[in-house]
Length: 324
Image (tube, rainbow, N blue to C red; front, side, top):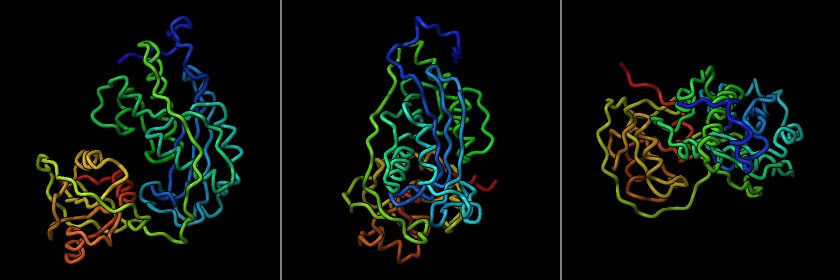
């Protein structure tokens, strides 16, 4: 591992690199278009990735906070927090003129852009940089693309996972050596354009995790051959509890995330990808539970829990270990 820090000279620093960065993390009520931000943090970095300052705020989502077991923010905690419209100006000051940096930056950008749209404003961001994409450009030897793996590679200690302020700090500390490694190797940064979003749905009063906005119904695709899951099946998924390693998860219909990537994340989390539905299936993931496919019909007949892709992606962030 190469840690360049300030040893990278002005002569070797790429002139085309941005002049400043805003490392961002947001925690949300879910992953769908109508979900809201419940907390946000920004670390401002200079052109070489040195921290200038940081900022954090809770945000009242004006709805149910969603998966409290992940972000730890209850309705009582968020009740007195400012609305996004009330913090938009300060947020803008932190983002203005900088490249937005995030881990899975497309998600953070879309959530931020939709909040700005609701507030009838536009985020002052022209480009974003995903640290997952950057780690791939650098060919970092990571076991997976989780933030904790990137942090461990650079010796950064994560103190409170899924706390926006600590996640932003961890990412800022891991981004700096990544940036210097890219500069030393002459790697072109994977910058993407940020376009303002205006398409969003008003939040329902009290949405239920597992039953969010549906997507287009589906095309058929073949199942992939995968190695057996090393953990025993602990049974069915229970609402408002985390997934547990060994659970059998089946998918039906189209997904917004590439299906193979979604299945890879499932296996990576220690879950079993099931090609069909049986009484042993722990969970069915589908964006159209009323499609009448063989899987959804069987799942309903067996009483198998059903959640949509957005809720499932959130559940994947914190899978409980298998029973010892």
